[in-house]
Length: 221
Image (cartoon, rainbow, N blue to C red; front, side, top):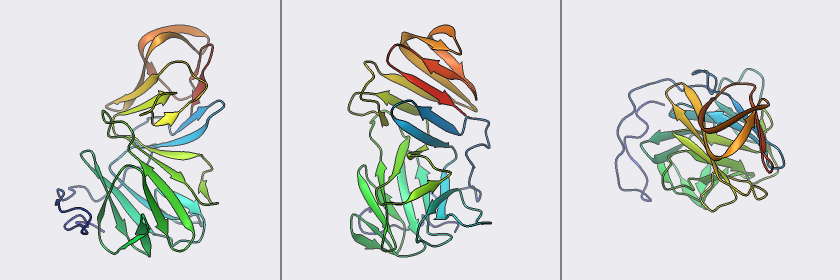
């Protein structure tokens, strides 16, 4: 599937740079937590790297993101190039009901249909972050079962405000999780309890951490 960004469909006239690596990076490869569980909101899988293959959740299928649904074992690939995300279709795929047969640029709010039934949304909601969110719109499930996928580039904004990657309507403040090399950090203006220890400002997050305050609670696995 290499050099698949060599040309794009009519929806995007730019030619992205050719990827230099031929391997996808799995979520756990860098030691960054793989899952973010937010009380009262849902669970999200954290995926690092720059390229992800999406396919059917069947035994032995070695792809990055799997869906329990009627799609091919290797249905499509997603690639980040800077802030841009491109989709390479390997089966019948439509973006906003427009059929595509070669790499296409994904815009914030795009709806992707795989085959006849599987539908997912692509969000790039924050202008200051290159991280994106995938959610299933159809009655299908990710495997492992989560509410969404975080394609982590730099940061994850969580809170009640527009522009949040994950909208947390019951929170009264915004919180940012950001990536620095192979580590995750939290930035918050509010005082937080991390594993029952008081923290504020910026601090590193680890697998197993439980973060709480009066109105928020989330954990990392």
